Image (cartoon, rainbow, N blue to C red):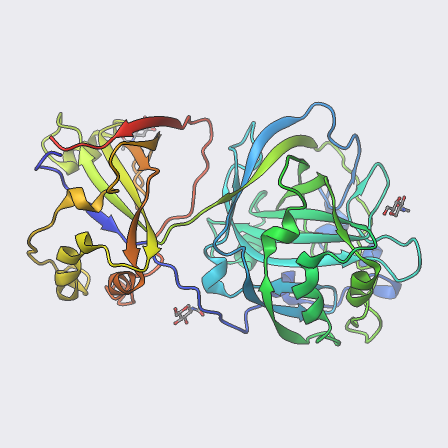
Length: 459
Ligand SMILES: *[C@@H]1O[C@H](CO)[C@@H](O)[C@H](O)[C@H]1NC(C)=O
Ligand SMILES: *[C@@H]1O[C@H](CO)[C@@H](O)[C@H](O)[C@H]1NC(C)=O
Ligand SMILES: *[C@@H]1O[C@H](CO)[C@@H](O)[C@H](O)[C@H]1NC(C)=O
């Protein structure tokens, strides 16, 4: 490696502590709507009555013809086995995970116009729609050639351009929210993925009640099988007042998930804000009008987040300095090698020269002279071949100049929990601990990711 190489280290920090008391408010903060009587869907205001791109809809064709292909990505760190708050908000049971976690749950897909979702979305909450306990009454909001099923789960995400779901909804911009809808069919078998929700539901009764739940694995609820999923994509609205037309819908058609009569009965045991049994919390299907309904056959993928990422920033030798390279606005003026660090029991000694002096630069703007840094040892210590992803991209900090040839090394390296904690003690320019200094994933659009088999060696 060249000795004139400049480098930056970006610490990606995860803090996974559980924070209770976090629940999204209803759109508009109102809870005066209901599903029957004088507050039923036909009386709902706002865009519910004036809109022309409303949800839910009846999905015809079912996506077996004329399907596109793609991948839908979920980052898995926040999707597995964690605590949650379940609230009866008078209209549904809604599960949310603390803000520290939600900020790390991303949904993304292949880029528009040909892919599934062109942006990255942050998970906010999952809630459910169900029917009544009378035999044969189904409770999904979306229907398929007129047929409904037992239960529908909505995984609500907001575009990572916004700070909160409320902010995204009130932007009134199309695609500022993405909802993934999962359809559950009635079977005799309990769905174990729903067990943490069912246990928590049994602690709830009245509108406004909240309870803590444990061991939720969202991915298990979301993904009925490991194979391909057929899904429907269309632009629509929230299905509750004010029915803002801000939602990119991703409805999983097939395969469907399942729920048992006992589990449905527990959903149907909570009360609405009028102290009546909360059932049939289902908005009727809405006119499609001139909207485009698209079908995809997709793979659903976990995308793993690592504890930390190191960026080894190089500029092309055509330029005299990093600043000149940035100012050139030429793609490939910079090349950044990204190294992913997994948490390990043992320390990574290669970080010690940095950690030894880090305490002297905790305040923004400080710098210090360090010694004995061996950049080579910060790379994966793997002899032989490794793979790397290469793509044309940008800096991940403002002004996000699109001048970077990225090389992400697939063979990861490691760092201990204690070393990570030391990185997090650095103070940022707003005098707060420097945590979560990562930018959400961005749309791929029509860029190509190349995969190389390569070998690291020093000259
Ligand atoms: C996030 O977690 C940290 C501890 O890791 C805690 O101090 C902070 O209050 C949490 N943030 C929120 C918004 O709850
Ligand atoms: C109710 O759901 C079942 C499948 O679980 C389906 O066969 C039936 O047609 C549905 N009824 C209606 C009215 O959609
Ligand atoms: C940088 O290049 C892009 C695309 O080539 C162009 O759209 C943009 O205006 C340029 N910016 C500057 C500051 O020259």
